[in-house]
Image (tube, rainbow, N blue to C red; front, side, top):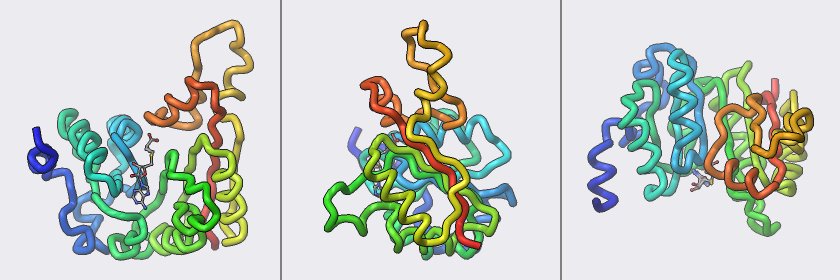
Length: 219
Ligand code: SAH
């Protein structure tokens, strides 16, 4: 099936005019707390997390239509009623959400943009962090996972410089969990990190340690 046909079939789960939702999300979330994922890719994380947490309302944002469609199709087939999708760029988040409307933000395996002159495109660079703190509630949390150590160190530094409070971090999410089970050849995943994403599975199976942090926005 052509991409536009696939998108059309599941369009009930895609927010067509997200700017009209600004300040109005409670109408669709039915007052449940709103958790947002940026860059959901093919959506394993958001669909499994939404299925396991019916009392939370999820919004997943993804700029690439050709991967987003798979995420939306999964939610559609599973008849999930607590998740909606935005096809768009995180740069526009404060046009889509009002101040304090989001209580948790997930960044899973964001593009690391390794070249220094592209640092402003990293989803943890100062401008993005400012945007997040505008839409996040005061007791909100940011959860980030990545395979890329340089991006992780950059994120820790940028968060600290912008007065975010790092409440937890590790350079080896699953390794620290595996030490008790070295006799077991199967990869075990530390449940603290939540649902294992597509990228996480790929990098972990190649032996790359997964970095993870939790942070709170500035007071
Ligand atoms: N979270 C998934 C995919 C990681 S790849 C996983 O862990 O498996 C990173 C994804 O973020 C890509 O699909 C990319 O299109 C998306 N992305 C990158 N920058 C973005 C932005 N500014 N706004 C929205 N999505 C973005």
